[in-house]
Structure formats: C-alpha cells, structure tokens
Length: 62
Image (cartoon, rainbow, N blue to C red):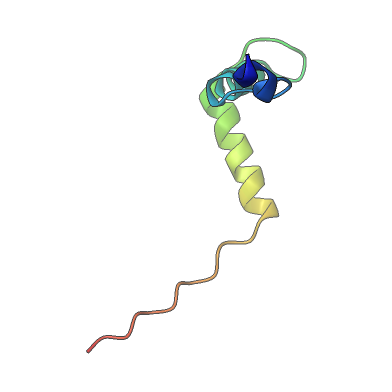
C-alpha cells in the first residue's frame, strides 16, 4: 500500500517508455508513422538546440 501511494501520480520507467512509444508512433495528425524516423527528427532537434559538450580535458600522461 505504501508503494502505491509513493508512486501515485508518477509513471514507472516502463510506463514512460510506453508513453514515448505511443507519442512517437503517431504524427501530428494522430496518424501512424515510422517511429525510427520520428526519433531521428527528435535527435536532430536536440542537436540544434543544445550545444555539443565541451571537450574532455586530456589526462596527464607520464
């Protein structure tokens, strides 16, 4: 019972993955589409918005 109350209103990881799958499987009009293409589009948007991470400092070699 305590676990149910603690999780009330929150999705589990599996539920979040299912929800993302449902969202990516439909286009803006609600019609079925290719999920892989949608994911690629999303990743391209993320790359446009967020700059690449700074280069890692090189470790000192002996």
